[in-house]
Image 1 (cartoon, rainbow, N blue to C red):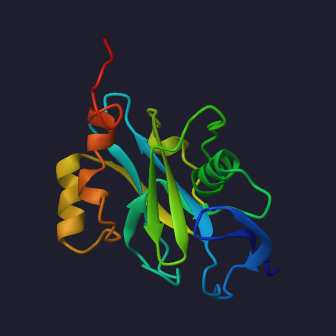
Image 2 (cartoon, rainbow, N blue to C red):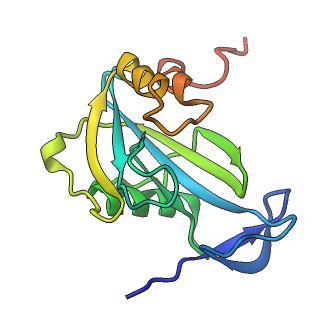
Length: 177
């Protein structure tokens, strides 16, 4: 059974155009879409939960990636997509309705909204989506950087700095007097 994934199409100002796109069909000029990415850190912030993509994935097969990600479906809000993708790929339920995305990254087709949370999850409690994920593990910053340096992690330009988003709560420490 083939499932068609549809998504809202946005303009360069990140406004919905009223048009719907279909996964696998290239977008036209001036058309964009959103994806979400969930990154889970341990409660202490010293480890991040990563997944290994299945060898059958069309992009970056068998590479390591952050916890969960996927396209925002038509009519879906970002926090709903984050909740759905995390549940689908890992079996973990987390309600993102009161969690703001921490980072927006532009990619060739649109933008990735990145949600970051801290939660201790035993690996034995994970229920991997076999069609997408082949393995998951907790890694330290040094272990993550080694995977990046070895070319085994998807080459996100922010990946080597992702632990900074746990170390620092926000862009600045400016406090108004």
